[in-house]
Length: 207
Image (tube, rainbow, N blue to C red):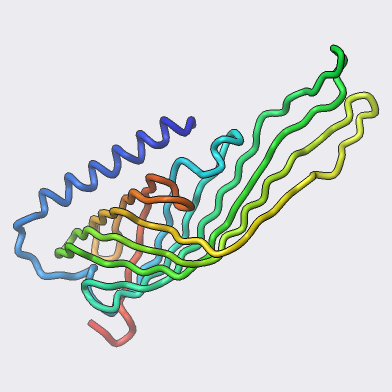
C-alpha cells in the first residue's frame, strides 16, 4: 500500500472516530473505561515513517502501556519500530554495469510516556501526549559485484540519542467495556497519523 493511500485511510478512520465521539456528547452515562486506576495496552500503526524517502516502508508500529493515575493524567511507556528498503538499482561505468545496490534503514524508539486528557467522557476522550526516551537509527546499503557475483557485507551507519515524541491530538472511543479504538496526529517516530486499538482493565481489587 502506498504511503499516500495509507495516510488517507488512517485520516478517514480518525474522522470517523471523532464523528462517533461527537455523537456521544450530551449522553449522561456513568464513566467506565477511561477511569482512574486503569491499565491499558495498545497497538497502533502509523504513516508516514520518517524513513519514507528511502523507499518501501514497514511501520511505524507502536506498542504502548498506560496507567491512568486520574481521569486527567496517565503515565506509561512507548515502543516504536519502523524499517525501509529501496528497490535494487545498478551502477554503470562507461556503459558497463559494475554492481547492484539497495539502500535500507530502520529505527526504534523506547521511552516513557505521559498523557493529558483534556476532555474525558464515559465512552470517549480527547487527549495530548508526550514521550521522552532513546532512539536509534540505522542506515545502510547492500552491494553486489555483478562481474564476480559477490555480495559485499552490508555497510551500515548508526546514530542514537535522546528523542522527544509529541502527540499533538488524540481521540479515543470505547467500543466495549475493555476495548477502545483511537487515532492520533503527532510528530516523529509514531507517524504523523496513526490509528490503533487499546485494551483496558482495572487494577486488581479496584472497581
